[in-house]
Length: 472
Image (tube, rainbow, N blue to C red; front, side, top):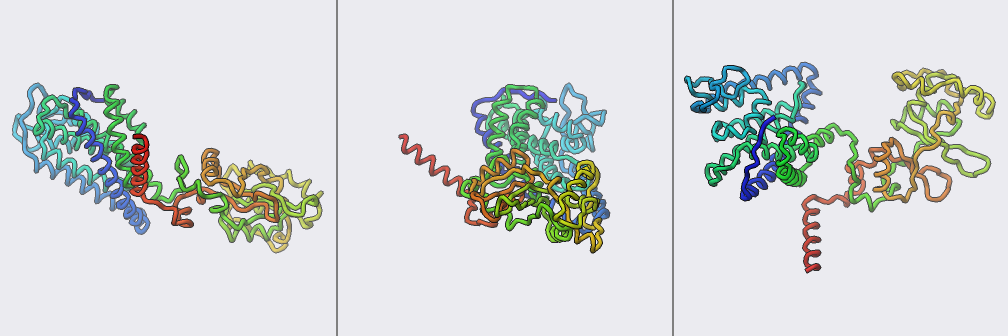
């Protein structure tokens, strides 16, 4: 998309490190502010429904238009460079005349009125070293930062990736101009610093270092930029992680989605599955009364229920399997497997093949409001064994919670049954769901396990000093 020069001195390594630190700080600030604004938007949308969403979009559009047409009046006109079409005769050019006389252009108007692609191309270009003023870049940086914050979260099809690149490229370009003007690096390419600024803000706000590195290398088509890109991304992501999570993770947290991280938390190694599993367990018998099933479904919102079966060979009930809430609702709606006598095995054995549960699950499943039963039907029985998952995943009650976390996440499970280490009257100790692995839930049960990020850093530094002292 653009050509970035790699002509860079070793002394420019320090500004590159500073760009990474600034990108991490600004990225974490952007994440924090966007979370607050989106929370306000969510409450506003919940109260005002569709009318509020439309009015909100109109208000932000008016503010954006005012900034686009009003801010260029604050910038002074610059003489047109030689060898370029200036002012631009096409809408896509960066040299906008605005209110300037012939032979001059307004650089801030060019940034405001151009598309995102043209702005990125101009900021990253190595042939536009003197085309932007400090004041214009600073005004454009502040306005774009604020407009991106208030726009993201509206009920409009808007993105975040390109505005973040523009913000980072703008303060990166400011850094390059400062080094060239005041530090004395005449051969420094401002486009290169704009590129590193874009990488730093992307890493500080989104925290997806590998993907961003690949995207930026495709953007410049220059593999020589790989070391600089990796360095800036690593620093910005590390600094940003000290303060908060990325902007996309922030959205997941705001929506309260039970998203599990790739690796378990360190404190999970000190807990067992019994410590956090949901108990007591709401279970059903293999042959259960209809009224009991209706009562369980009405009083709980669980989506899985252990099915227990009592056999003459064992004095205690055994785990027959797990049945889903949706399957129970279908059985109650169809009513074809209702029986009068629970002790008549011939009756329910001959009728168990009449319902194809997988075929009935293809459409929209029923809810409790769809179930209509008479008093006579509620006194009948259902055999749940043909519709039970007889091989659910199970773990022992003393298994490490970290291992159970890895098993649950890697297999994409919804329920994980916790069984006792030794047999007893209760074959299921509890059930682990995604909610039971969430850090908020675990730390709510055991608040002493919580450790601040700054304390983790101090612990790591103390360990590093101890190892270095021991080795020396």
